[in-house]
Every structure is written in structure tokens, then in C-alpha cells.
Amino acid sequence: MKIGIEAQRIFRNNKHGMDYVVLQEVLQLQELDQQNEYFVFVKPGPDRCVTDSRNVHVIEVKAPSYPYWEQVALPRAARELKVDLLHCTSNTAPIRCNIPLVLTLHDIIFLEPRDKRNRSLYQNLGWLYRRLVVPRILPKCRRIITVSDFELHNIISKLDIPQSRMAMIYNGYNEWIRPQDDPQNIYQKYMPQKGFLFFLGNTDPKKNTERTLVAYARYLERSEVKRPLLMADLDRQYLDDIISRNNIEHIREHIAMPGYIPNADLPYIYNAAFAFLYTSLRESFGIPLLEAMACGTPVVTSNTSSMPEIGGPNAILVNPESSEEIAEKLLQLETDEAFRQRQREVGLERAKLFSWRKTAEQLLELYKEVYQTRKKG
Image (cartoon, rainbow, N blue to C red; front, side):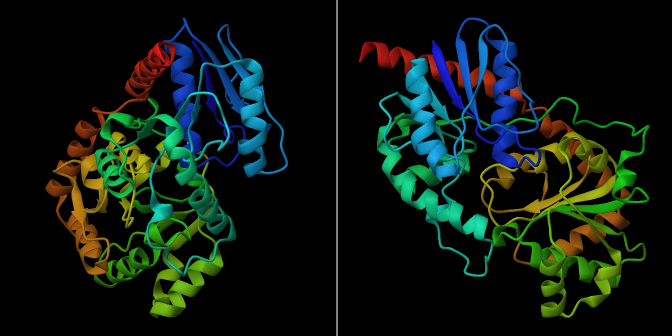
């Protein structure tokens, strides 16, 4: 097979969820499969995290914008290389493409009611682009992959797609994300001491940042320890607005906001943290949840969407719309050492069910199925 994989953004420095997923899939396939030929289509960038090998070729495709790159430059490059199938990995794909398509549809949040408080131009443009493109490409896709049973049933029920055209393949996590010492004290780039609370959030309302900060305020009011909170990917003005709106000025001195945290530093932060807050309103999978569990860090997560599925039945599952419930679980972890230790063991055991190797093996089988169907057709 000659397999094309769209990985447009993996060479950028500040990678996010979908970028990491396709990067790990490519690296695992490069190690796993020596029989088939892969063409990985990327936009030029500074972080050359994938290099050519005998049967894996990195194809840099230049274009002035994301839509032009995907809708014009990508299918043209794939046609010139005569790939047998094209796997588009980030929810969208070329509308006009005569190559058999495999699509990873991580979620259909863009079809769900929109929170009007989201003022991020980048996120709003992405939302609009997906709403325009996805309905047009779904009928053309040979297989549609998603990343949890929750999202699988959500897509089938809301888009009326036959289950035979769907596939569910879980994400994984890197092997170096595990319980470990930090001989270089890398966590101190962000926090002076261990034992802090850690939250990955941003301005997207689904991340539930405001209720989580209100929960943190309630925790501080009742805690004897008053652990500081490390928050990544959040700007100061957004924080100031939340503090002002909720009259929780007392949390300001306890919060550290370093901005973007490189993926290589995350395992040291997870290991140094007392607990990880993953209190989103809606997730299709939740890689940070899995990574924190793999490090043995107790996690407070939500009882909605895919998070109970990934965290498992013994995870700390809270109503993400209840700041009081979030605060109570943080206090329980702080005052009940046996409970905290059980949660550490729960996470470590649960994480064993997931790996990028399993993801790549399932992807390869799916590629073979699509290829055989194409030949018969």
C-alpha cells in the first residue's frame, strides 16, 4: 500500500491535542510497519519531529492558509504521489478528492450548541470551517475513525452514519510518561515546590475554567494547606475577568500561569503535582487525563462525555457544573491519605489499558481493510 497521512501541524513548536495524536501514530507506524509505504504531508515548520526512513517519506507542502493547504495543496500532492488512500487526521478533509479517504473525526462539538461567550477568533474560525466542510466530506469517506465509545455513539446518533462505516480507536500515551524522579528539578521552571494542584485549561468554554477557579476559591477558604494552582495555556486578561466576575480576588496570589508548557516537561509536572484537575464539560477522549493517571497522579475529572470511559469506574468523577463538588474532592484528597493512595493506584492500573502501539496496530488493520475494499471495488 501507498498510504498518505495528513499531519499538517506537527512541525510547529506549540503543538496541541490532535497534533500529538497524529505525531505518535506516525512514529509508531514507522516502527511497526516495514512493508507498506507512507507519505506524511506536513506544513513546513521548525520542529522536525519526524524524519524520512526507508518507507516513510515526509512531504512538505506549502500553502498560505489552512483551508488552501487542505482543500487544494494536499489533494494535489497526494494525487501526484499516487497514494492508495489518504488518512486525514484532524476532523476535516478535502471536499474534492478522488482518492479513498479515511477520516479521524475526534468529535462533533462544532455541530453542538455554541457558547456565545467564546471570543477567540482562532477557535471561532475553526468552528465555522468545520461546520462548512465536515457535512460535505462525510459521505465520501470510506471509514470514519473516532476516539471513544461515547463519541462513536454520539456521531452515529446525530449524523445517522451506519456503524459499518465507523471505527473506534483509542488514543494512547508515551512510554516516558510514568512515575519518575526529576533529577533536574524541571518542574521548578513552573513551581518552586512539589505538591501543587495542576489544571490544563484555556478560553474555550468547554474547558470549564471559570467553575474550576470558583471551586479552587472554595478549596482555599477551607483548606489548611492552601496548595498553589498551576494553570497552563491561559492568558492573564481571561483570568482577571473571571476573578472580577466572581469576586474571588483571594485566589490571585496562589496561581501560577506560565503559558504554554512543552510536552517534554509535562511528566515532571504531573509527578510533582499533588492532584490534577480535568474538569472539562465535554471531551471526546482526554489525553491529559490518561497521562496524569499514567504518572500515578490523582485526578479529579468529570462524570460527562468520555471521561468516565477513559478514567474508569473507580476514578474521582464529579459534576463539572458543581464548583462545590470539585472543591470537596480536592479537600478529601488532602485530608484522607488512604483515599489519595487508592486513587494513585487506580490511575496507574487504568493507564495500562492504553498505548500508542495499540493505536497504530488498529490503524494498520483499518488501512488494510480499506485497501482491500478499494481493490474489490
